[in-house]
Image 1: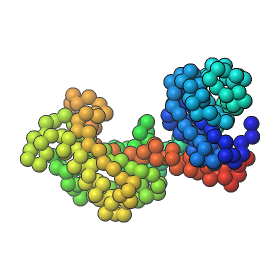
Image 2: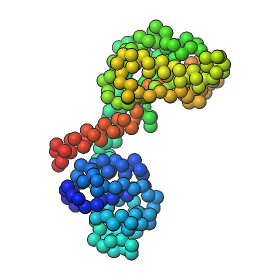
Image 3: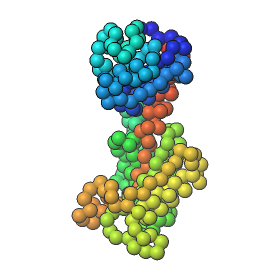
Image 4: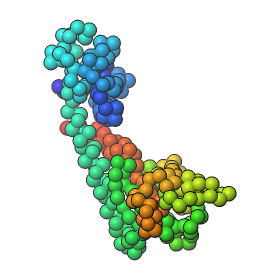
Length: 266
């Protein structure tokens, strides 16, 4: 079915809220955004009930709605278009774009590490959070402190230039090992890990990083990369992680795809 600008009421039904919202973002280009409604449902019967209550003219659906091959089901309106959208192609395209962008970020970080001779001290990985730059605390902080040393400050200033190449939201995560921390300033590793993340953020903002794109988190010893069973492992777990947020990358890729389709709707 050819989509065109319309004032008809449209609903999108999906069992996954993120996918449903992605579909809505794409539909908003083709249809009147004020007429597009998204629902997350757990069953086809629940989807049918929503169709009945909403009285929509068109339904985009990725779950099985009983009897919707033709839709003369009791409680639904005859003649309602139920479409299994090709919009999923757009979602797949966004996923591929996100993966490619994370690979590009990783490549830039690897080049940065090589160029600045930081191998073993700065690393890059990716997971469900996004692209992650990991910095060992051995080049950032002295034991039990939250103020960066000279080498750490220099390294973070260099990383600022790297971060500024990509316009995404960034989270600074502080992590410690499981060695107990008890002081007036830091009653536990929670305070120490958060204070270290805040110090990195402070340096980045001072360099010119947009604070609206920056957040911090402290995880104490509770997100170890390896077991805290020997000194070398504890050293691995004491770290700062700078995370390019996957959600921010996805949002940017959707915007790029939307602009592309506005220029060339195909």
